[in-house]
Structure formats: structure tokens, C-alpha cells
Image (tube, rainbow, N blue to C red):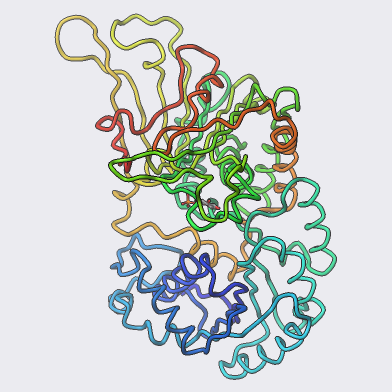
Length: 528
Ligand code: BG6
């Protein structure tokens, strides 16, 4: 068994959407896998007064809705050390839900009131004694970003950063900062009272199995790596599309937009994993060093180039399959004349020996036709095309790393159509991750929470990586903010974003990959 040390988990924002949709279900999954500490308790904070009992009711509801937790166990099971016995399978059926929720405690807490922080050490001491837990505490800041400086500073004033009696760690949600300057200030403020080793900046994409699998695909196989460079790769395309709109997150999203919400963190991390050099070993420092090197090699997009290298868009209302989907400006807590982008596409280069001259394209958007995240490596065409059939670039080999859903890898290559002549057709070699493990794939938050509890920061973002990512995007943010000649293109909900995005790809024969277009061929489930 590979259980983390006993500790108390304090969730700031314990009744919030993230806590209930992701954190609590992830804890329950770990608990069901016997991957939680022997002795453990959760203290959730929130501004509204509810009793422990009422809060436990909410937790129970949250785990009731947690998908895929009622699973059986095989030898290919989930995280390292997961209990693979039959009794674990029985317990995983949810029978221990009451015991699980009994570990939760609720405390009314106003993060702007100093007195509330003063109450916290005593409150934690009571829990510590009740459960016979030592001094380890993990704080999870599942709160609006403007509290990322306030809470850690106040916790430190109460000595709750002091590791004399056990470790103290803190998970901080994204967005980490608003731009380069604010991220730097946040880092400096945090480091006044906490050390880098105590700070875990979360980007849940790094917890996704399929994102980590990019490293395994690249570095455990001899066949890909020799081709993985400027000599053989024509361009790289990374897409993360969502069918959902902003839902009830209008007030957060208005201050964020797609570039800060998705590109600065999730998509640049995908770029980092696709583009990094082999790390010297698979430890936290080596992997994070290689990631930073990629970010630092991103060729800056100068303010003058922003209009040529980026496209932004915003969804407008449309009927999709008989249902009216509101435009972004009609969403709750969104300014009716908002210029916030819900779609962003960028073209950029990585200036290093491996990638010199290879364009990278990334795009993300809300209210697109399907939910899919994928990285596509487009290999160069053959130097001379002998056969009739599909056009030159349909014939480019593509390796598609599908992050979600239907996690897997697809290799597209040309084959002879049986019969006379030499007609060529693109076919797929298609691996589905689900074939590897009969299990559900663990949620990213399970892996990340577990790693933090074990003190493993490999899949968390180091401050230099955050800063390098902001540095790269700052000119784009600035130009988008100040240059009104850069349009925010409207695109109807349910489409692939502004058509203008195709102009980013300068070669006339090339377009973005539209994963829903060739449904039968791609096997992607199209929701809209
Ligand atoms: C979050 C963003 O970080 O990632 C959301 O704030 C987005 O706007 C979400 O919807 C996407 O995550 P996933 O795992 O569904 O791709």
C-alpha cells in the first residue's frame, strides 16, 4: 500500500463548484482505492453558515454524482499502490460513503476577516486530536484568484506555514496571475512566507493520463523520436474545443477569456510535452527543467505581429439541433458589449535546434461542434508524390494524440485501394486507451491530489514555467486589449470558430483538422 502521510486537508471554497464537482469526487475515488492516508480529515471553509451535517449531505450528493467511481479492479489498476483486492472492489461500490463523509467538517469563514484566521489553528487542533493526526496540513485554495495572496499571508501569520510539527503544503488553482507582472508579484508575495517546495500550482491538464502518455509515447518508443523534429515534421496543431458555453462562470470568464483560461496554462503545457527534449530522468526537476526550456524558446510574438499570428472570436446565439443557444453576451454576468474572447487561435514558432522553422498552431474555443482535445503531428509529405488519389496534403501522415474524449492515438497513412492502378487512400491505425485498461481512466484531480499528498511536484507547475508562459503571451494580451483594429470575430454557437482562423495557416492547401468532419474516419463523437 502506498498511502500518503496522515494529514488534514483544508479546502478554502469548500462549497464551490470546483470543490463539489472535482475535488470531493477525486477524494472519494482515492478513498475507495485505499489511497488516502490511514488517518485523515477534511475541513471545508465557506462564507455561508451550514452545519457539519448539512455539509456532509452536500458532500454525499457530490460523490453520488461522481461518474465512474463504481468500478471493478484489475491488475492494470489505477494509481501506484491501488488496492487490487476483491474487497476493495466491493467497497468501491459506494458502501463506505457514510464513513467517507463523516471525515468532513465545515467552518464558517470570511477570508477578509483577520479573526477568522485566528480561530483556525484551534479548530484544526481539535480535529487533529479527534482523529489522532500529526501536524501535516494541506491547504487547497479553491477560491477566486484575488484571494491567492490574502489567504497564504494570513495563514502564515497564524504559523500555519511552519513545518516544525509536520509538512504544510498549499495547492493554488489557475489562473496564477493575470499577466506577467501580476504573476511575478503573486510569486514574490507567496515566497515571502512560503517556500517553493510548499507551493503546488495546479494545471489539471498535467494530471490527465493522456497528457502524461505523450512522454511515454515519445520516449519509450524508438520509432517516433528520430522523426520528431524539423526534418520530418511539417507543423504541429493543438486543439481543445468545448461544446459548453461559459455556463454560470460569466464573472470569472469576463476577466479571463480563452487566452488566459486555456492557452496560458493547458495548451502551452501540451505544447511543452510535445516539444520538450528527453529529460535526463523521469523526476520532477528534470521534467520541469525541460518544460521551461520549451517555454523559454517560444519566439516572442511582437505587438506588431499579433494581428497576423492570432485570431480571437466570441460565440453568438444560434439554433443548434433545434435548441437555441445563447450568445456569449447574453450569458449571466457577462457585459452585453463584452469584447472577451471565447475562441483563440495562435501561430508561433519554437526557436531551437529541434523545431526551427516548424510552425505550431493552437486553438481553443467554447461552443464549438464537439468536445475534443488533441495534438496532431503533421509529418512532411514525400518529396515526390507518385500516386493518384488524394491531394498532396491529405497524404501527409498525421499522428493524432487524442487527449480526450476517447483517449488514444491515431496514425493516418496512405494505403493502396484494391483494384487496378495505384489509387491511394488515407487509412487509420487507431489505438484506444480504453483497450489498455479495462478501468475507467482516473480523473486528473485524483492523480494530482494524490501526488501532492505524497509531496511529488512533477505534475505541478514551477514558478519559472508560469512566468515564461506569461512572458510569451503578454504582447498578445496587450495588443488585444489596446488595439481596437484587431477584430473579435463573432462565430455562431456550434461552429468551428471564426472562418478567419483558417488564414493563420498560410499554405493554401492546409486547414485546421476538423475532427467531426469525417466522422466515420475519425471516430470522434460529435455532440452538436
Ligand atoms: C478549466 C477552464 O481550467 O478547464 C474551463 O477554466 C474549461 O473554462 C476547462 O472548461 C476544460 O477542462 P477539461 O478537462 O474539460 O478539458
